[in-house]
Length: 115
Image (cartoon, rainbow, N blue to C red; front, side, top):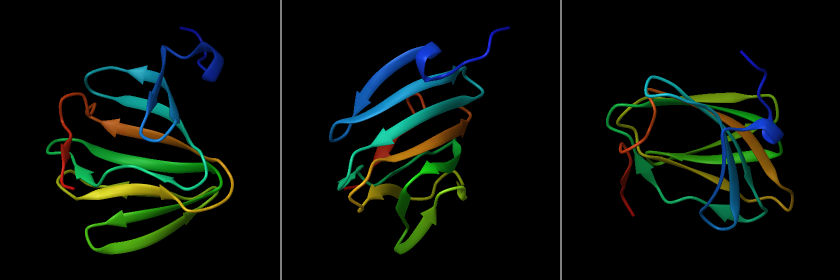
């Protein structure tokens, strides 16, 4: 068993508006990703039927739209989003946003966009 890092990730990918991601754990029962969002970017609002997620902010400040509520999550804070809950993450700042995203089970084939 080896340690993982951004440089030793299973896979690098790009998503959204020039956002980066690195798969650190990629199994059916658990997904752990490191993601980076440039300033003033966001993802599309969506939900997962089966997967719950936990976001932990490493650098910056995130704005989450969860259902109809806006929640600010700062560096060294996290937020748990249960399956079936509409959400999206937004970086409204002038700095990069970096966070760990754990999904259980994996969100592969379990994303429904709502906007």
